Structures are given as structure tokens and as C-alpha cells.
Image (cartoon, rainbow, N blue to C red; front, side):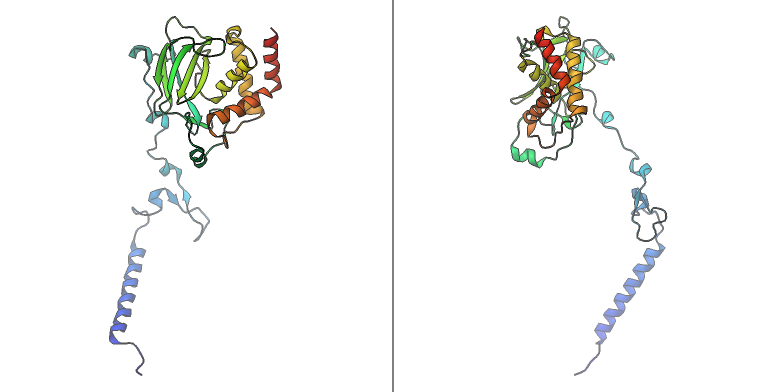
Length: 278
């Protein structure tokens, strides 16, 4: 049997060797920082790392051209207000806010879907995401926080969860004036105590439920009293015994956690007890 390579085989090996040699030459002659280089994509070799140190990020290149979310999302249009009123910063009758809920869902979803959506650790607001398309309405309410008549004005949240309405001239701030956000069968309420803080999320709704279940009427609470209760409730669920959104199956599950934490807070319990005795 004849051993060795045929002429065709030797020719193939020579061709492969030449191709590899030329490719190596092109790579060595390519200038650093070309269009496909790590440097052009915001990456650079860290100093002192040598051959196998990996890449570090050049933040000045990575952030080039970035825009803030506030610049991308314009303010919500203001229902019931003129363009001039909506432009006035701090207008006393303009009410603005955001609706937030766990995973940005106020309406009930299936357990499977809620399980698949990533959750976040939360103090109120921080772990709740904006709700798109929720209805927000302003009502006069009875002592239990239920609407007493038709909505004074209503609107719908935009894709950033924002809403804006003009408060009617004959409406007054106080626990008897309520904002109610709804989606499906779920709702979040908040008394209109002042115009500086009107976001709708789980903590204000949980406090309202606790007050009503304690047998108190909103008609007997002043703005100052309600604000005091709200500060105690906020600190209870955010600082003293932080409540987490993680593991909560929708709004009702989170509300139950918040309400229990508030009920177990000694300061808030004593304050509610004193009000009941009065």
C-alpha cells in the first residue's frame, strides 16, 4: 500500500496555511478603536489586569445620549382645567398624582401570571409600579369612605400612571373628599387632605380600611388628625416593620399585609383608640 499524501491533499493544506497567515496579518494591522472594537462600545481594559482581566465600563460613553424618564413622559392632560390653569405651577385647584400597584396591576390577574412576573422589595411606592389605564374619580364620600353621589370629575391614567383633574370650586379639602382609582373590581382610595401628596397606592387604602373597621367615621376626623394617622401608618409599614411586595398575590394580598402591620403598631393603635373614646 502506498503511504503519504496525494497531490490534492498537499495542495489543500498549503491553501489553509496561507489563509490563516493572511487572516493573522489583517488582525495585527487593524487599528485599535475601530467601529467594532470594545473601546468604541464603552468598554476598556482595566489597568493592571493584563491579558485575562476582562473589560470595565466607560460610563461617559455608556450614558452618552441617554434621556431621563421624566423627559420622555409628558405630564398628563388635566381634565376640567383650562390650558392656562394647567400651566400654573401650584394652582390651588389642580390635583395631580400617580396610581401605583404591585407589578403595575390593579385589576386581578391569574395566580400563574402573578407568579411569573418578577416582584420587588417594597416600601410603599418604591415596590409598586405605575398603573396604565386606571380610572381616577373625585367623590364626596360618607363616613365609611363610600361615594355619596356621582363623581365630581373623572379621568384615566396615562401609560406612566399619571392623572390630573381640576377640583370643582365648591369642593373642599378634607377626609370627606376622596380620590378613587379603579380597574376591574379593584380600587384604591385616598382622602384629598392637601394637594401636595395625592398618589394612589396601597398604604392609604389600607389605612382607610383600618380606620373604618375600628368603628370610626371620617366625619369626625379633621385634616390634621388624619394627616397624623397617615404619618404613623407610613412609618409603621416603611420604617418600623417594613412590608415587602414580594410574595403578595395582587393588591388584596398586599393590603392585608399592610393593614395587619398597621394594626400591630402600638402608636397607631393607641391613637385610634383615643379617637374612638372621644
